[in-house]
Image (cartoon, rainbow, N blue to C red; front, top):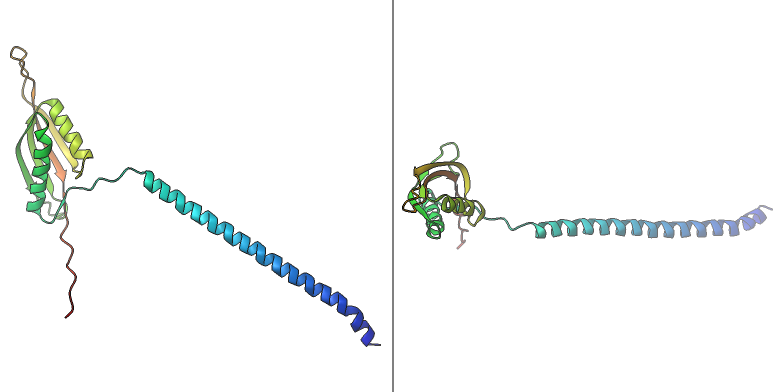
Length: 176
């Protein structure tokens, strides 16, 4: 008599095992679907960040040189190039080392010119490549305008900027 109840329970056990197997397969499919959904969201986030980076304006590199002399020469060349297109004269360009920050020395420029010429030069320094970050600018009148002979006001500009001294990267060693 004990065999009869076991035989009666077998179809029920087979059905329960089948249901358990179907539930396990369904849970696996749901889990895979959730994983795929998470992977899609991650990919969308990466794509959005890449689009934001691509939409940003290209950054302008700063004025960089390997040493102070090269930095001063690059600063002077930048001033000369910008002054050539404007009514501006460069009186001096100097380098003032900063002991607190030796990799960011101060560059000082003394210029004379019209208000429009000096304004255009400062704007180009701060926005064009290579970028020169101005810390101070002192503007004064060198010579007033003379309406009788048509001479414009001559302005004097002293500016202080920072340059970047980046030592050259070490060369890779060759092994014999």
